[in-house]
Picture (spheres, rainbow, N blue to C red):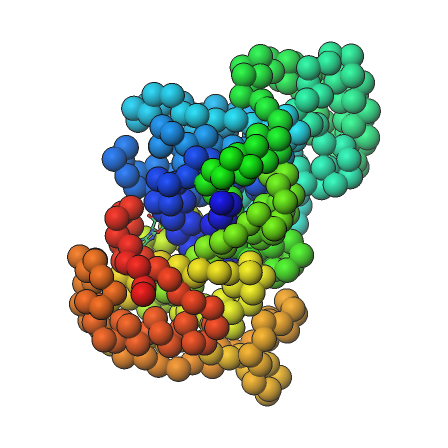
Length: 423
Ligand code: GDP
């Protein structure tokens, strides 16, 4: 069976923990989009690890970890992270990489940096991992597919063609001195190609064979619905599609094989970088929530913007994912509050709005809150739903009704086993 583990919100919902947990019954974990800008934090017997490009099944010996063709593949980041995982004692991580994946080149990272600088105050809050320039090139068909780097003449011609044009743009926009050296880029690819070769495979064929043999496959999304290029808070989105349905494309499998879509949402909201965020809170109130939730970016260390649970955004986020099972993480974090606000609607231009609007309207949205009673205790040791404080159950069930999708699991701590099934 194929299951997807994806985010309902702005990312950082706690997907990594779920993939790590559910991969115990899986044979394959697949990253199908995004690049090394992910930050999945996993805490298990190997300690705490922030994974950026490696799939979250990496710590399980029997799991094959797949980097699908939809990923922005950063070779340097890949080898860096592989070394880190090995240095923690994971001897032989099991990895395959699609022979159709495209390479995130060093110049994509440089272009990302230069463009964010040029944009100044209008910047996108990019992690500067090269993701937007990478996908722009891919869609303009001037990306480098990994299979192309094994033919010297073809590669040289292609790089010359692509980079001659790119250098003209760079000269005009950022100045001559920032030109990309074509020979250096050629050498970079030639040097990496033998080390990468043993990992390459026809991922689509590999996965379709696994499906035929009834193996369990996890599609692991990065970020969440609201960052989807088509369905999110454009232009403050990522440049790929973190939606479960895109797993079919980014991994090359039939869409109807994705049977379960675990959609992760947090008990409150967080958002990294810029873009509309209706329930955002500030000052001491925000700092307390941020510190209690450890809301600092796994990739950048940046303090995350924090706010209350947004049922309008999450209802939409679950719909876009096609959620079959909602997982609410970080419920333990809220144990300090007397009253907990939940946003059930927005007020936009004097009207009450229940459906998530497009970005310019969202910029004007004021949250309408309902206030639920807090439970004022630590719930991390609780193992069963029935043993949770009444007010915790009321909070979860109120949100479940508001979003209209079934909450099946509750996260009550960062560790793998800190999860409660909701009957
Ligand atoms: P991802 O990108 O969706 O995988 O999310 P991140 O890993 O960036 O952020 C989730 C953070 O919350 C990580 O530090 C997790 O260890 C932690 N976490 C996940 N689930 C829970 C939970 O239920 N409670 C608490 N307190 N922390 C959690």
